[in-house]
Length: 172
Image (cartoon, rainbow, N blue to C red; front, top):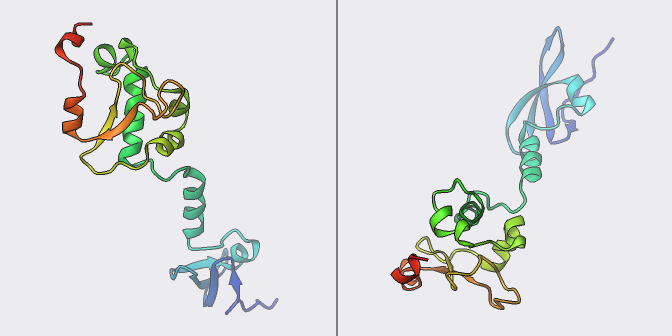
């Protein structure tokens, strides 16, 4: 039986450059991926579609599947997740004295969606800024009936100090 010459044929992102070797498991071909990587693949895997790239296609598909907003490692995402923790988790160090047990909540749409939080708050203006509630006894929320402009802002450390609860308020 005569083997087919795959040279210069394209399979997915792989372009066959040359025959490499025959093995007990089939003929192996030297290929160049569209990303530039050289990859060796069996003829059967190329023909069946099992091998379509050097691996870059799988990485791209997995990344696209697992990415919803692309900000999972951002400061904004960390702020959002810390808000949820300190307002809802009794094991959080700040829950009992400063947040959840004191009645500080996070709005339902912010709690359920980082995208909603980010849409309302936008990007953090600088690394010095952190989340601040304008009404210290109010919830973490974007625009709503009670707070038409929202109750949160990105604030500098100075703005945070000027907006903190007074000693008389700490007793309650």
